[in-house]
Length: 148
Ligand SMILES: [Zn+2]
Image (tube, rainbow, N blue to C red; front, side):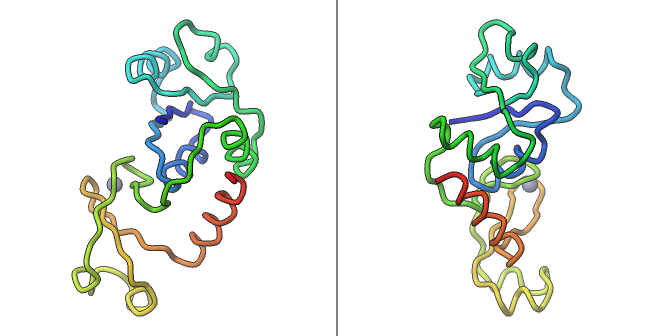
């Protein structure tokens, strides 16, 4: 399942990436570009705009809530989510993260993080490092709870 989120759904797009889903998003795309991309790549268009949804040849879903956890819940209820490992995709670039050995990140992450975390992943595109900090962990539990 691959998604394209419209301009209004940036937060949902970010969290779908964190949950492991390939999700395109840009707030710079016009409605026409969004529709063209969704069609060309066979992506499910996530939108709160019924006019955008009515464009021909689109697989789309009207996202009914403005609340992130409810949005994820709706996607799950309607069968768009399966259980994937979170933290496998860059929330900025939408590309798959690569596992890195802990010693390789020494000096690149705050000392506290190095001491308390064992698993690190790196985005091959932007080079950003990811780990499951406690704040993220709590948020992931909350949104993946909604996804169940
Ligand atoms: Zn990246």
